[in-house]
Length: 226
Image (cartoon, rainbow, N blue to C red; front, side, top):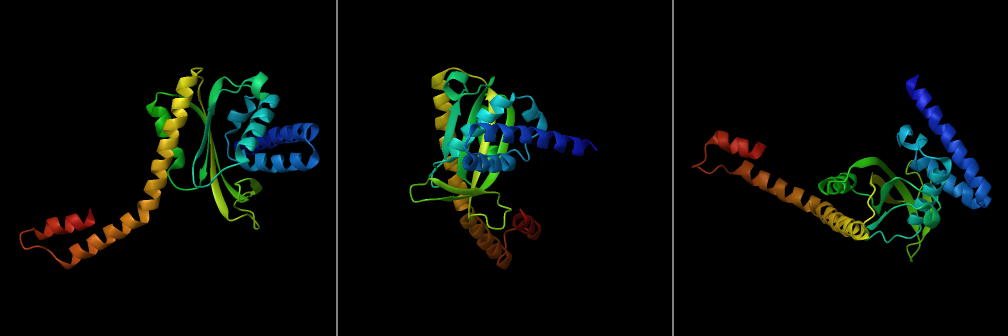
């Protein structure tokens, strides 16, 4: 019953967001953003949504949607900013960290660890894997849930994290730079993963074939297991 109540609250909030989108956007764009919002917010804890004013949820959704519009999959896209009503049309008491990256392991944890390392309290994490199609200029052409039968093949991970609000522009720029570095390291590590696994397999096979006479057999077996 508790789960049902939570989902009813989520659907009610998404319905309100849908109505706001259709009231303020032309129908085709409203439908596209609404479909994205339903996928993106599908797994977000309801308490992270209901605490926001509808106008702020609407503004945040459009801001994230705009963030998706252009992305070169070969490099991470990072934005660290403080939503301001006059500048962005919505507001928050937190600093927002938005990341868009080709989907791969370790992305969310790596970003979260870096923010924690800087002593930033994480208040909310929203993450969704998106099926996307982009043109040669990396502009978004189509977006869907990976579960959709006709979804595009490419996968991108969208991460939005809310942390303690900081107004020091230099600090925000520094966070953005270090997250770029962290994500490049993740890409390198994931890219090398198969080669490393292959090398380990070769080493294990070599150990299994030969046990040096000066090595205790039990130690040899332990080394292989390790």
